[in-house]
Image (tube, rainbow, N blue to C red):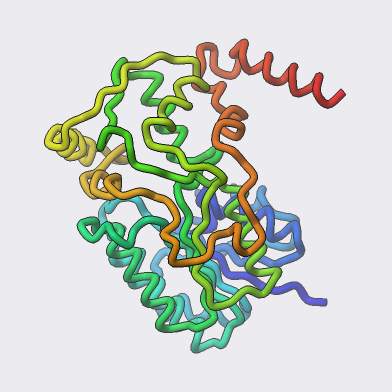
Length: 327
């Protein structure tokens, strides 16, 4: 039996690499789209089962160029997203126009499924360009293709994320750490592997026409996340609630960096809790509750930010305990 072909946009990111491993392991053929095959292609090929991955370079995501890719696929997955605008990468173009193109082509080519990754907690963030563009994208997908599934994850974390790793780097360098909105914003972080399990579940169980909020097993405030990371990397830092005017000024400064740690737009989103709305089903409702807890997962890779890095004493104590527990 010929394996189903799945077209994946955003395949070279954290979620995409994990997903490619999972899909090819389960005998799906993946067509991974990347803008720089020489930079990203070799990384992607190391993630997949041999013979189950084709990497295609597409430098411009125009409708005509994308249309050709839909000729052979039965499922399309859109993982593309940006956290800040830079040069030609604008929120409206990436989060609204691209999903509009993909969903129209999905209808035109009559494919089986379109899975679109959006974001949790954006409905009320009307003062954020990021949130508005994400909502536009969701609306375009729902309007154009009735068999679409929209997944709305909370913060996605893992060993190669830009969330826990950035914060641990900052906590290792700064004697003080700012708490925006007093650190009270709530999150339900979901591990990357749990999110890709949900995507595979949606495909394998033929789930259509759904909006699913994807969350981890616990609600954690921003302050609690920082406190947990400090414990894990064995650091002590002073946490200071930062007044909004100063926070906006610091975000404006960060925006001058090539890869800003915080933007004014992200600061606006931080006002709003990142937890299920109650309007839609969650991953638990479809029989796939998240089983990975934040502390347990970050503990597996946080030693790089401890004193001694990969030669950290704590690392080998943890490994020794794990070895003893399995014998």
